[in-house]
Image 1: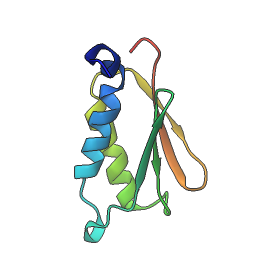
Image 2: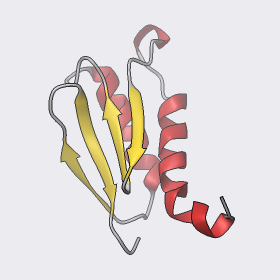
Image 3: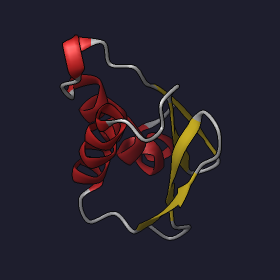
Image 4: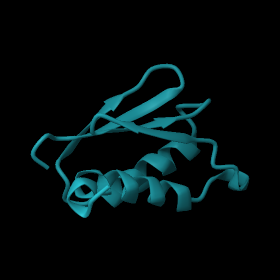
Length: 87
């Protein structure tokens, strides 16, 4: 993977790293992340928990000025963070 190819997904790496470092209750970090098609997905068993909110805020802080939008997920998928095409 060249640097040119890696730059479009750098935001996803930074967001995932921010979530990895995020605090959670009893340090369990009860989430999983997946990436595909310009979308970073946050998955967890309790989508309405404080831990998921903390993870979402860390994702948001990490993407900075990148143009994106959120879509709320269903069932175990808490949210989708989608980067716009020309970001």
